[in-house]
Image (cartoon, helix red, strand yellow):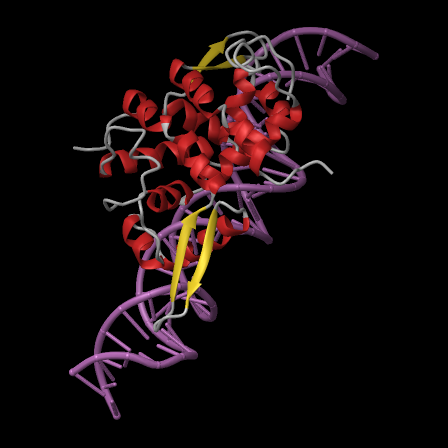
Length: 121
Length: 121
DNA sequence: CTTCATGCTTACTAATGGTAAGTAACATAC
DNA sequence: GTATGTTACTTACCATTAGTAAGCATGAAG
């Protein structure tokens, strides 16, 4: 990305270089990829088993939930723990990075309430 | 989503209900949808014409850039202005909502620098 | 008359998403 | 001991979206 006249970000941060732009894009797309935000929020609110999360996150399918959980685990936003009961239980929880991410994204709620067209009728 | 024991968000915000969860998911997925964050950042940094943005945002295709700009305009994060020169110029800029969104997302840069595996090398 | 620039479309293929059904490893009910 | 249920996933299939490349309208310049 180019150097630029718009001041809105430059005034608040010391320096933005191309590396920061790429890292910003990468993080935003991870957090915002379909279902991820809702899954992280479900975990933040206490859901910790596959079926809990599936119920918390409206309309997600088992297939996509499994895929997203794997991806979020690989990216170290969540931690997966196997509990050998019968049937086996798997617990998911946010990593420290995941908790921080949710905290960082939280202002989106107020932003949306201010700017997004209402969802309810 | 369900009520939950985890305190990390509840301690910081007055109240999270199901509506807030949906609105959170919706906003995060808008901001994080592939290319959107990079496009908004390019605009924040001063790019204002189609071809500027196309150059700023690495590897995006014309087709997707056009589609995303239309979407972001509809969602009122950006404003499109036609300038009748020849060839015609189109200027894009962030709306107030768009500027605020970028400001809100900015902490992601530090988060990523702290937690994401390095991209360079 | 040909080439160039801008801001898109169109056509086509590859990847991802959505829906539904199935599976392994047991436990409990009948 | 056969049937059914539970959990956490897979697999199969089709629809939607993304990626790549080329084209197009409008004039301007050479």
